[in-house]
Image: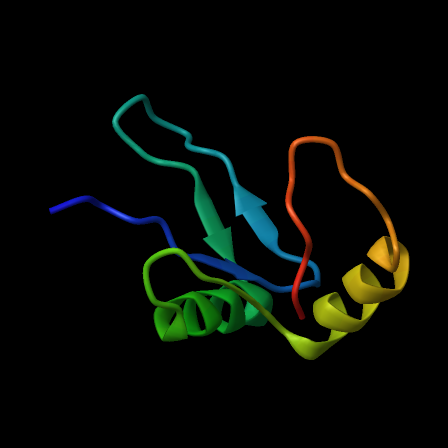
Length: 75
C-alpha cells in the first residue's frame, strides 16, 4: 500500500514560538493553524484542499498559466 500526501492550505497570521530548550519543539499557534489543520483533515490522499480566500487568489493568479512539468490544473 502506497502512502499518499494530503495538503491543507490556509491564509493568515500565526504565532511561532521558538524553543527555549534543546528538547522542545517549535510551536505554531493561532486560529489560522487550527483552520488549516481542519482543512487538511478533510483531504484524502493525493488531494490539496484550500480555504476560499486561497482558492480565489490562486485561481486568479494561475488562470491560463502554463507551469512547466505540471499538467492542466482543475479547480
